[in-house]
Length: 113
Image 1 (tube, rainbow, N blue to C red):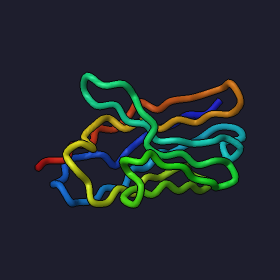
Image 2 (cartoon, rainbow, N blue to C red):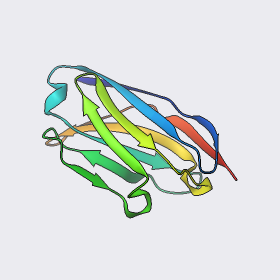
Image 3 (cartoon, rainbow, N blue to C red):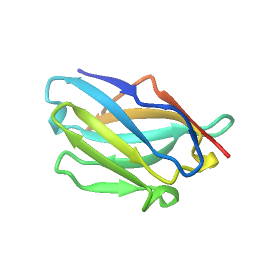
Image 4 (cartoon, helix red, strand yellow):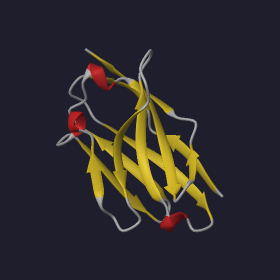
């Protein structure tokens, strides 16, 4: 089992930056694919960025060039630059391996205009 705890959210002005962290613990964490998702009020949860156990990354078109996902033995991170009001959402960390998945509880990101 993998436990995930997000942190680093907060209130920031448009154009600012935040770095989200997802502390991960549990057996075989490094063999799991990791991802950041977000959910804005009234909208479905969507993929923001993902990183495989081998380090390959994938980004949603809306965040390409602004967000960077990374990982190490302690967890996964999301560096968010040039933030926009439309980036406001709860950000969730997810780990997955085959049909198994785990989710964190999320961290709120609010970008003011």
